[in-house]
Length: 261
Image 1 (cartoon, rainbow, N blue to C red):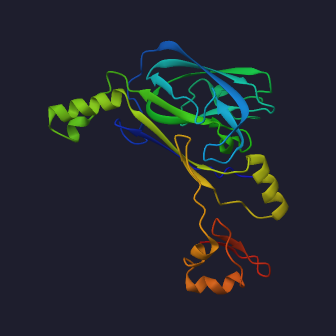
Image 2: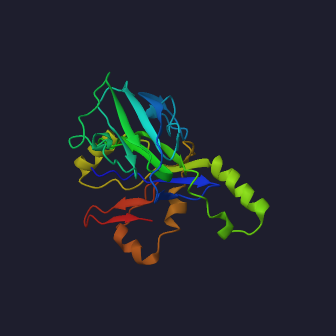
Image 3: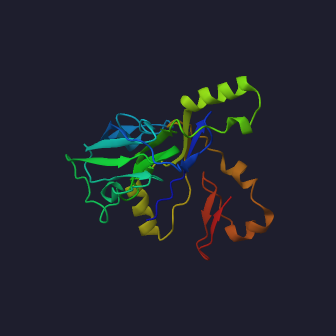
């Protein structure tokens, strides 16, 4: 089943989703070590308990704060009951293709009880993210932000935003210490359970239960009557008299139309 998880990473202060490559070759620093401890535990990020992946006891995982030019080492310890890999989304793996995290292509799965060290050089700067690259595990919580601070020879173009030196100083301060916000979909079923539903019903599961902000959210279930009040009149005949689910979803028995309101 294709992964339908949608995740947005914002860096407040230093730009939004900024990502760039340098024209100059950064001098290497490091190595800069990180350790990601993966566990499979029960949590309720929106108030509804379910099994999920925790990275160092949390989801999203901790940010990887890096400087452009750093030699990065990320030790991943798999204490879950299934294999996994980690992909560093948007990161150029120049000379380090074995650290791209794609199972069956650049590496084997990190089996339960095993570990793997990813090694790569930060040749870019901006905001990126890391996530699972096995099955739908990103939907189970295995993801986290990456922030790469630009090298000193890459001056920030804040003078193009404001001519006020005090405003430029505040923007520079925000870039030096950005506040990362991760916005993501969340489902009350695990990725494996969603796959089993999709296979047995022959219908893609495209609805989600919650939107999480930095791993926290809340469920707001509306009544069928309120949901029905939002149905556009031209769609009413396709419902064949059915009511909508609490997600505003219906599949007609006769025509197999899939409707999302």
